[in-house]
Image (cartoon, rainbow, N blue to C red; front, side, top):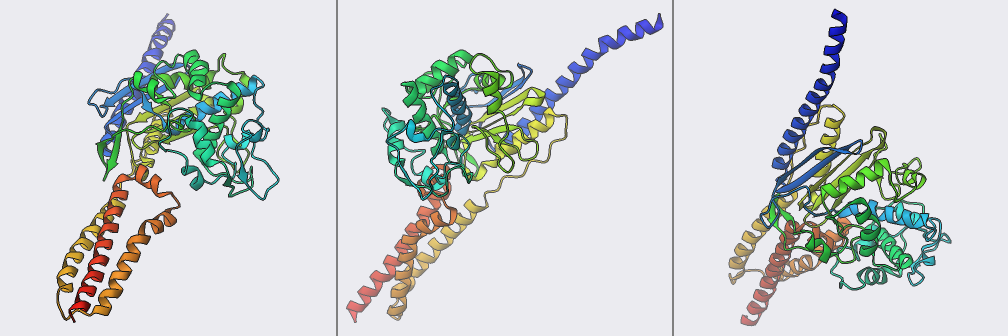
Length: 465
């Protein structure tokens, strides 16, 4: 009798113990998130964790740029989290027989051309796995731009056409959003629909993603508002920017509620795609590669994940297929130098989900911005002192002429030199690092002023002699 009582008590305690652990984990996640958002000065965020088809954790923090509170249905721009959605759309068309992965892209986009010494053509598969040979630098020339609304994807593809490949197709991985721009154009061509209409009809509606959109007007209708730029780590409300050609690679708007549904489909499947093709999307690439069909894969544990950022949003999601778990985090502040912050947070979330201790969050660093500010201020002070020295009649005219010429040359060459050093178009630096771009403009202006003063005073003194 005693053993029977103990057995019954143990049965009652098991679910209580599981419940207690779940409660403890939720409290740990909440505390970790609050600390993280405070440390990285992120004004608004939403986190959803999915296990076995259910949302086991869903919480929001902070506000949007219009002062309203973040909710589970708040649409954020999700950046490159758009790419797995585009890859799903491609695989759906593959399943319908409208696209072949090993087919040259000219089959679907005959007007698009590229220059290469290789005999190998770019295939749809190469675009998906980011091995087309189109360089990231060339891709940045046509992404995150202000295209006209009508036919935006077609306009951007036309602008990219004629590009010189930096590598033979299929040989070298180089992450490049232009690859997914081309995939978006292929989807439009074979479906005879706009990209926005196709994903809305074939993905968002079937999955119940009611607060998702792949075009600006629908995104605004569903509640999208701009996020925050980061200036020296401080959130500054953005004026808002939307690339009308960008939905296939980075400008889909969605909420954590909706993306939890997308992640659940990726884990458990459904009517959209056969089990075989869904498994292909989640299959790690061949050894030595870390990017598959629309997903990054962890180098050691090989689970699929993706991060994404726009000028004022940063997001990340991951799948743990073997455990039937997934998570997505959306935030509304971005800066290229702070890109890793959300990755640090998601690494911590994954550790908590696995019952492990989280590592200490790396502290944010704004060394580049502060260094540029100090240099700018010092150069400004030196320029003022230089002006008073130039007024002295005893000043060496030849020395002033040389100094003025060098200052003007440096003013002209500073931005091209910066672009060369970082390997990124200047427009992208302005877009993703506005404080650094502003300080660089200040430096250019001060150098130009310094040079013009020196040359002008030299000319005046020469005339006075």
